[in-house]
Image (cartoon, rainbow, N blue to C red; front, side, top):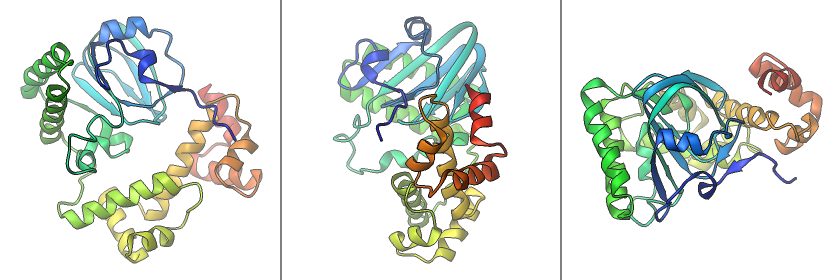
Length: 284
């Protein structure tokens, strides 16, 4: 089946893209993309710092009130909408999936930052007051020297480290490297296999650990069992597909590898509390 979810490409929303990265003032970015208020995905990483304004923005169906010095991170594939009010200001950075690929020796280095976990609750937070001036200054310099790609990479990594150290993380990743790697690999495996693999034992086998070990790690760090984490990812994809009018519920059930439409409907209602049709009416 051909996917019909609208995917926004870097070139369609960004101006003056320099070797895979764009940095722009928020006011100008919004003025140029003022019609981009429907649910959509990006095929690039997107981060935004608000320094002024209000309204709301939604990432994967979780809605946040805009406040000054809020920052959010989005990974490719997440569904996003906004409804901003007042005079908006801040900075926008869009960068391609492979922007750091040849720059970092450690391929999964970006997963060390909590805001690239793929969990929405990790991706939106407020910059602490004593860091605001320094963070804004780095964004300003980054905008001015974005044509120097190595400077842009170093500056972004510096921002990531500053923000990681100053934030109150809602999900504390394990300090030991082994369990951190296990959890990250589990989440990555879900992302690649959630349509076909639904049981914790399947993922435990791929990770060469026992299902009990996997469940204990998930409960300790994420506050949910491995099975719940898998089901939440399936439900998230179902919600993403339901906001696109072109998809019938039976098509979504087929896309997500359910045997029949009625089983998918029961699964969805048990997880979300409403039927797929009711969810669609609410969000479109």
